[in-house]
Image 1 (cartoon, rainbow, N blue to C red):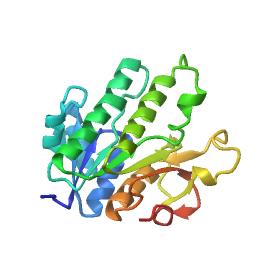
Image 2 (cartoon, rainbow, N blue to C red):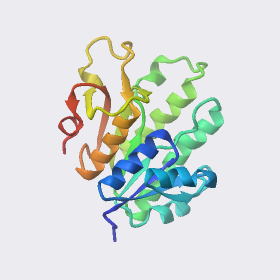
Image 3 (cartoon, helix red, strand yellow):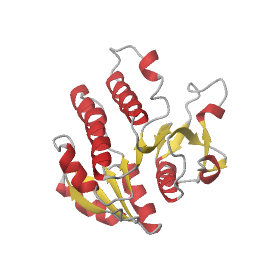
Image 4 (cartoon, rainbow, N blue to C red):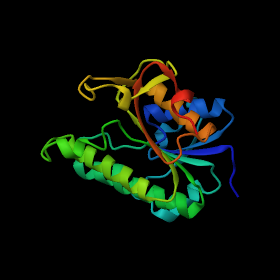
Length: 225
């Protein structure tokens, strides 16, 4: 049975994840925030989440499924942070794939992936020797696997992240014109958190990839059912 007011955030100590936990809690959800380091527990609680200590790099599908069982949705907001190609692959790709399998095993249909706006194209334009390439490859491949799944996914692709407060308004990258992505568009992390909360509350943008930046249109108008 699904507990319709519980959401699990994987990568619960990330900046976007902490903001999303607070917004989901304000919307009436209980939030389990999966973290690797127990020392992050107080920050998670302060943000509105319930810390669940589980190392997603080593956790298998059964362990992840146990954490997901009964939830309404899983949000994958984990990331290795770049700099180490092997760990980037382990977290941003391999752990993401296991999380998808675990959600299916646990009977959690709703899966929200936090990606980035040019994940679908960077692998084709970057030199494999570029230091950013391992991250681009991992995110691209994880997103593709999610699209191939039977989950009710939403892939959120923000542009360059900032610490600016949320405006609640965004623009799709497809509406940016010919200068995208070279126009250095940005997205507030808090707007990403607003988008996460919206697509879960409204069950919006199901089986869609939404690439966006801070813009002029209310999130609810951009991301409809």
